[in-house]
Amino acid sequence: MEIRISGLSRHYYTEGKQIKALDNVDLTIPANKIFTLLGPSGCGKTTLLRCIVGLEVPDSGEIYIGNELVWSHKQKVFVPPEKRGLGMVFQTYAIWPHMDVFDNVAYPLKTNATPPAEIRQKVAKALQFVQLDGFENRPATKLSGGQQQRVALARALVAEPKVILFDEPLSNLDAKLREETRKELRNFLSELEITAIYVTHDLIEALALSDLIAVMRAGRIVEIGDPKKIYFHSDDQFVADFIGRANLIKGSVTRQDGQHALFASEIGSIKALNTQNIAVGQEAMLCVRPEFIRLAPRQEPEGQNAFSGKMETLIFIGEAYEGEIRVGGRLLTTTIEPTADISEGDTITISFDPDHCFLLSA
Image (cartoon, rainbow, N blue to C red):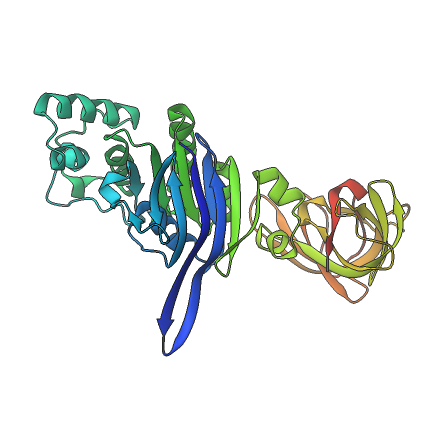
């Protein structure tokens, strides 16, 4: 089920000031995709989700779910949440502690006066799908965090919604359980072939789960793309910096060479992708990810995009080292293999492929 949003705004007033939680948002969420709203705290992503569900009333704009207009300020249309055919999984799961697993999952069906035989059939199907069959009579308070998350998912699915929405549902889980549940959730949603809207500020979560990501900032959609496009070839400086770690280097374009350009920077001349066609003479920002910086200890720099530097800091994080290398007046962050024979204070050579760095408008 496709969702179309146009001109959506939501303003709050506090201490005499207007805060634009949503600022004239236009957005189309395609059917049967996992669509993630990603951004820092306070960017408007949860407000947008709540407007789609109907828990928040916008100040202007329109929302269509499929071909049905569910909100329009101009036409004075407001379809209540329970009539929109949506399922939602909240950050806190909202599991009823006095109910067992069966009654928690069955709750939406009972409120709609569904016949008991049909309730039993649908609850059994939903619990089997989330791999909790056999847990029907288990008290909700006796479940682990991951199991409670699955109960919340089963409850959202049991009424067979057109769209399912998630408001940071994994944020209360520990790191290992969050990783395991993330994989399960991706598999569940892919198998369902349902439209899913997922809100998070967790970069790994967004990259691992999504078919498409919309990055938000200050109530606006900054950029939309698939995870690889957003991570490797973002069109926006804020997005490039927000999505993972990035080395951003100032400079200007000195020559165009096909898809690449020569870039005069504070660390030297760099050849980089110039997909934005930034003109010669214009200021720009170069983005290179830490994992694309190669190290060659105690060698003289040779060839394109090779520079001499000094290892300033080296932090062991298990699967790798995180290092900071001073090149000229800049500190560049890099990821280094845990077996590398490098120490703080070493003089090293760094290099990176022109296809693995790109220019952004300054």
